[in-house]
Length: 431
Ligand code: ADP
Ligand code: K
Ligand code: ZN
Image 1 (cartoon, rainbow, N blue to C red):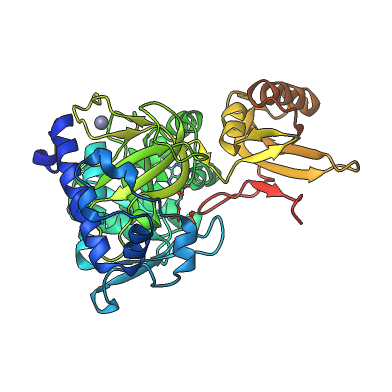
Image 2 (cartoon, rainbow, N blue to C red):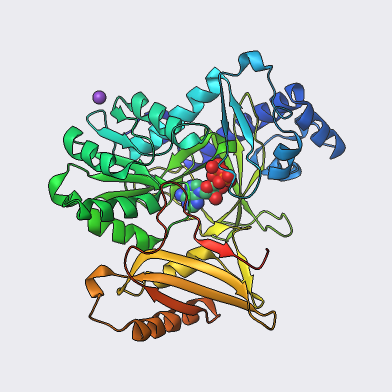
């Protein structure tokens, strides 16, 4: 049941007390070894001794993506490169990729955290994990690889792409777990059907571990129904190691292990810490990261915290599903729209598929024009007229978004497919 029973069975007070101690050590360490943090805290007038408990975390300034960009590539490292064993980089979704470095202990911390998460989701050494996250600079591939091996599972490093081969491997080698982005899983399932492979009947697949991009609860249901698996949500950013925390088998939020992380949610505008259940930007402190300390890291991701005991019995804090990045949001005629809300609304209409694109343009009067293209669900081809379906989709979107986008229904398999993180928003207003 537990990978690390001593830690996993801790109560809420015990967790907070431990976090206070670890936070103090983490701040002392960063102040002593990282010129970046020393300068940051000196100019904010903070001494490491000011930090005595978890509550004192709010005294500390935030660290932002720009800080990493300004110190590119190694300026924020707290150890000489001789102690760094590995380098990774972010995917660069929002700009120039940022570089991260890991000491031996950092690699251990990362795989311990993820192994614990995957174990809590139900993955065991008997499992055969097909790891279709990209191997390379991106943290997904190697992150899952080492965590899977740590559990003792059999890892197939299939990496991303070559979909036909993925499906053959899955059948031939008896993969029980697939790891990839949710958008790639949707594509994989569809591709398998075309090859005459029903994932439910013809493979041993029982679980999927999906993350690296936002996906909705509705998408989870669709994936689970189509491929007959349990779909687990997993989270991480390269700055906090990579994919590093996941849901347990309850699938009710992602647990952040208290001995490794201290999490907060803040108002992205004011920086004020928000309470349990309030939606804002996730801020993560990694307790005891050596190579590249991360203290009050602003992830840019929007979610809320759950401190209640989980049905799995663990008290380690959870985050709710991430609805998007603060900077993902786009504005159409003054209305804020998150791509994840568009997805959520689309998934309410059974006649459309999971494949959609959002196109933002300006009309001849310079006004914003939002267009949603979505494929008709193959099962409904010939059963409903495109213009009728377009009206239905438009009505649904309008009720969820407070904007009325133009809707174009297109034939199955005409919109782009994605092997890694999906890029579904095309903003032509900026060019
Ligand atoms: P980049 O910021 O360049 O994409 P990363 O490759 O480190 O860098 O990706 C981290 C980001 O991926 C997170 O900040 C978040 O926006 C997104 N992400 C990762 N996992 C999830 C998830 N389960 N749900 C929603 N978004 C996720
Ligand atoms: K094994
Ligand atoms: Zn749980």
